[in-house]
Length: 282
Image (cartoon, rainbow, N blue to C red; front, side, top):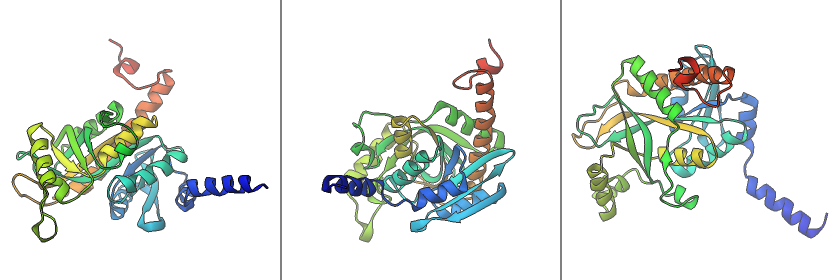
């Protein structure tokens, strides 16, 4: 092997990075549908709602699970906090064949009337995440798959949970970037401007991963959506889970079940996507 060939091989290995997570994904035989909580502990909440779950701990504090939910194969992988952490998980999952991603997270709402414990389904998100701008120009939309969004909304409606569909904002900061006080009460001019602007234009929530997931899915030809349980109301000051996290996990599983059935119906009809025309032509 020549010196140049050795350099190319070394560069290839360096570019591919740590392969332990991919190896674990392959051993789990993850299905095409995967839920993405940020918190690794939420993977267990999800798995407890499934049949025959298998949970594995991954390097660097991540966690994954596979199982079945009402006849549908389902997986879950924690993404950690923020867009850079989610990027690595998304890349590895896409490499092993996952093509449908559903973020199941927590969020703070900017609307006074939305109660903690209710659900927010983001059909789009403002890209303030600090990562996706390195992939594509700012005007590129962070838009959810219409199929995944409808599956989440349909599952939420069937569950009788309170929910709202709308546009959120994904930030690269948990505190000052969302207009919260940071260490020693520090506030940034930019964070306060973002908070006021997002409220003014009708953004319904802040969180830290959705825009990145939706952008990556659009760029790489995958399907993605997002549901978050509201744990904070930034207008009223209310804080609490009220069972919302477990509800969001269950709605995510129900969305996977719907997508499984719809995808099978579309395939049987020779259609690329499921629509009303597949089962009930007008």
